[in-house]
Amino acid sequence: ALSSTVYAGDNSNETQAIMFLEEYNERAQTVYPESIEISWTYNTDITEANQQAMIDSSLEVAQFAKDMQVQAQQFNRTGFSYDTNRQLEKLLYIGDAAMEDPDQLEELNTLQAQMETRYSTGEVCLNNSPDQCLELEPGLTRIMATSRNYDELFWAWDGWREAVGAPAREDYRRYVELKNIAAQANDQPDCGAYWRSWYETPDLQAQVEQLYNQLKPLYQQLHAYVRRKLYNVYGEDFINLRGPIPAHILGNMWAQSWTNLLDLVEPYPGKPTVDITPSLVSKGYTPLQMFQVSDEFFTSLGLIEMPQEFWDKSMIEKPDDGRSVVCHASAWDFYNQIDFRIKQCTDITMDDFITVHHEMGHVEYYLQYKEQPVVYRDGANPGFHEAVGDVLALSVSTPQHLYAVDLLDTVVEDDEADINYLMSMALDKIAFLPFGYLMDLWRWGVFDGSTPSSKYNEDWWKLRLEYQGIIPPMERNEGDFDPAAKYHIPASVPYIRYFISFVIQFQFHKSLCAAAGQEGPLYKCDIYQSEEAGTLLADMLKFGSSRPWPEAMEAITGQREMSAVPLVEYFQPLIDWLEEQNKNEYIGWDGAPEWRPAAPGVWTGAGVATSYSFTVLFVLLLGSF
Ligand SMILES: C[C@H](N[C@H](C(=O)O)[C@@H]1CCCN1C(=O)[C@@H](N)CC(=O)O)C(=O)N1CCC[C@H]1C(=O)O
Ligand SMILES: [Zn+2]
Image 1 (cartoon, rainbow, N blue to C red):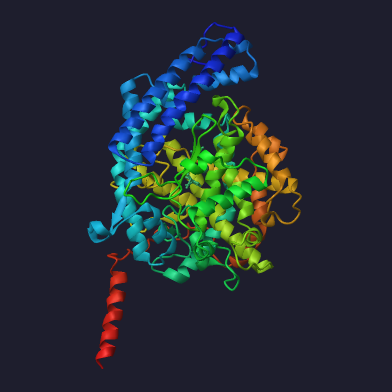
Image 2 (image 1 turned 135 degrees about the vertical axis):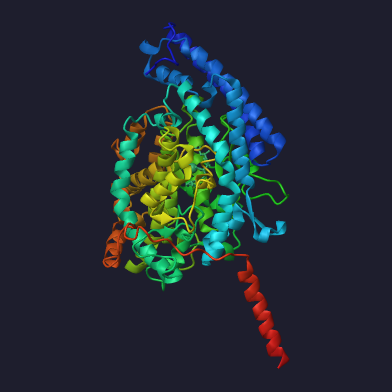
């Protein structure tokens, strides 16, 4: 609906409107590619000059978007066709580019670039010695994934927040003010409302809250079971069996995925592992081979292969020439129907193998809708874009598939092995749900003013306790700014899309499995080489954002709603198993409100040095007898 800021002109000539849209589509495919290439240069070589070039270029693109908006506003759209109307509307709401004051837009772009640079170059140094510094990828990520030392984990967790969290607070406070000014220039009350408007779903918040409440019992069961297992490892000083879990011992810097705890929590340890990390390493897999295996899965469905330019220009490994890069993995559409890339500091792990599929899912979507007008080269909604790669990964991850493509040497098919597999999937998909939900619960509160900057960290940890059932290993205060330790906050990338994706990907999986003629339990389905499944998916992807997302949902699932039912169906055997396992556990974490974990010890890396020197000393002593 049009209102004060964005008004209608009086030109009712639809032929002129269509000619304008065609001219826009032509010019956009020069303006955007040039700017995205400059952004790519910064992302793959962080320097002051490249950062400034990106800021300058984004100001030029904003001017182009503004010029186009003024032209789009001349039309009176009331009598126009659905498609002309929809295309024009996409040109009226242009995000930050709508800001009236160019100085404020430059300030905002500079803040966003500075926050991204701080995060991407952040590091934690041992004993403050500059030659023992670790960046997030791969150093700190590997520690969070593999260490079982409570103090070492705290060192990495706290050091990262000290390096990139607290220092971002003031930038973030000003960023929020400017983002809200931009939102109001797009006729929205605040930035959270503007981000939600992309879903064209008036009751979006109510819908995601309902989905979360339907899934909360699954999460509480998993939380209780994992808490018990962590209690067996870390003991009663650090784990209270009726309370929240310390945030730094869940195998991930943000506790958003618990897959790295599989060796601690596996229900039936005797079975062959479903984690292919050892296989990838022992078989000498390279990042390129990981990408090729993923591409082969996509093409086995009849989907479009990655083009030559993708292989020529992507960055799939962290450079070793001293360059600073934005390691956080991402997929890139250059909006010229030719250039599509992934930038990933790929580590040889199952986590990164899954991420490769996630990113390639984005590129597949780009390829499928590249014939659409530029204004429609987007997901049906942002959650759809996040779901594509993950849907395929649900098939790839099955032990049967991994065995078939020689990524697992042995596979056992019995009830216990199935429970092990479902546990490994739950550690990713169920553990994620509260995090995927709370990230934007916090940000929506920040943008609408209910969370003032004086309560940024307090409200963050309130949500982390209420939804994730985790607690900081040490008392936090407003001198900290922990949300900025997660990429999407300083990088200004909305997050509810991932929560939505984790729900709808199981709806898509169920429909694609039916199309592939797979009859067994949903968690065993593998759509590999099914052209029927591929066609069903591709036909929806080709829509881009040309139709409202319920139509895209209907194209795949035959109905128009988001639903948690397929996710619950997929995990049902594990839910039953967990309820049995947990029958004497305290479910939830409100049973010890006064409890706090004991303080972590100081980690100087001495743990390694001491044990090493002790061994040497011991051998010397032996030798002297
Ligand atoms: C690893 C992944 N990186 C994002 C993604 O791929 O979504 C990157 C960075 C932000 C947006 N982005 C893109 O690539 C977009 N250009 C894609 C598009 O919209 O076209 C990521 O952040 N993930 C994956 C699981 C949960 C979440 C996390 O790791 O918390
Ligand atoms: Zn994504």
